[in-house]
Length: 355
View: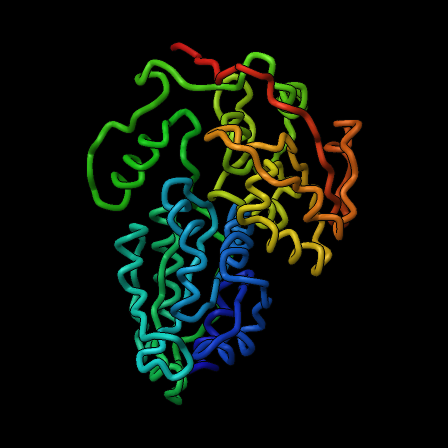
């Protein structure tokens, strides 16, 4: 079954990523999957491909799903364009795992389609997963077991297929976070809630009056530059008055998503330290064309609290000081990291936009 399913993956997907582990290592190898530093980064690469209209597969073992849960859940409310299928290899007897985790409950946690592999039609199972991913604009979960992967069977249904369709959609940037969840439920669960917008809520938060990063945001907005914004203060720029940023898939996600889509990631220092460092290391190891702008204010702007100096942790990336924001208009051919250092103004709070 490993070779048969691998043939289906190659026939139906544009890209595939994996973190090796029992029982999916051979499946990943037969599929010509790109091995990635961890499961979270693998999912973020796939979501980046999705933004360009490509179909992508992420192949991990059962416990590996835990490591990618954040972008998996966030993709449900953010949406996607090209289909993304998560193939989880469940080790039902803990032959090569710490436990016998069953990944099927993740379909309920993340509110995503669950497809059980049809042993007689692996192609149809994967094709359905891609179709449901794009229909509901979220990741689809295809579950396979260790015993299925050990079974020798030849799928005779494999045929040439159109890979890139990309008819999923991203969430409307005028929706509140609550509104995004409501829209996602309407689409998947058949509910009929009126999604909350900033307009009918009556207000939204924006940056502090004297935020030192406003010139950067204004430049990106005026020049129409596509960027991926990370979670944190910078995410406020997706709303009025700047309306920049293509998508967001959770804390620390901008680096890997941007590396496979628009090529420019803007992240806060805390987001990078929290869960973006592995992705940055993988991007440099693979030599992917990515410009990463790290906003170094030394604190968690949304929640409060000082943090460690991010520059000490990324010296290996040879970060440079961002002296000229026009660098964002130059072609990106290899990974580069710039630090934009500025302190948040004392005793200021986020301002409010009234509608």
